[in-house]
Amino acid sequence: MTASDIDWPASPLEAADAAFAALTCDPEPMTLDLDMYGRVTGLPGGVVTLPALRDWLLAHPRAYMARDEVWRDLVRRARLDGPAWVIAAVGMAMPALRRYANHLCAGYAGDPDDIGAEVLTGFLTALRDRVDVARDAPYAALCRAAFRAGYALRQQAGEYTPVDNVDHVTGPRTPTLPYGHPDLLVQRAVGLGILDREDEQPYIDIRLGRRAIEPVAARLGITVDALRMRLGRIDTRLADALASGLLTGVTSQQAARELAGQAEHRAATRTGRATASRRTASKLTAPATAALAA
Image (cartoon, rainbow, N blue to C red; front, top):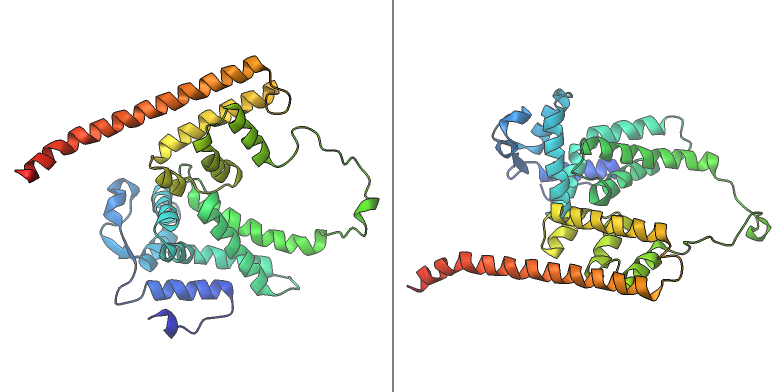
């Protein structure tokens, strides 16, 4: 079955399910090798199709370790290995997504497809950026995001209150420090040397943009764990700077010099590590190169 052979349904969820069916049908269905997860998970061994794996997970609702391992892998693949794995992840979650949509559509006066679209959007947003695969129960986090998105649409019609004229709205309008977009505080932190310039965009992408950490780490050429530790150290420095007023007030010359010195030390340390890593790689590859030359 190819994309051109599919009579695409109008419903977003039905269309996603049709795409999943196309990816998982003969003669070349998408599969996973369950042996890579280890026997400790309780999963059956060997290569299985995704629909068969979904059926197994549905039949074993208390196989928490197996579910976590499978979904960590699915999330990583969806983030790093292309759109086919995004569709695969949606298809694997389809029973839950349909259940949420049907529940939220009960008594809904609007178009049921709107609810389905919001449920799907919430799931995809969490899949792409929001769910941290280092934590337990990534599938539960994806499902919560999907349900909340659909629920928010249900609530919107009843809770939305229009304001005729914003000039008549009472209350304070002067922002308090730290005001402005958080990006401005990050830029000030870079200017003061609290945040290294090469870490500015990764920090904005992950901490402010809530993007997934795996693609960012791959782009930087470091491990996810290394990037997590780097971001944690940045969080600590920014929290200390906010608490001391460095990011929201006037910075003394002495404080600026100290921050610049700390930034230079971090840069020198990072450069030294990179140099050592290159030297190690060179030593490891030299024997192989010599052997090939001989």
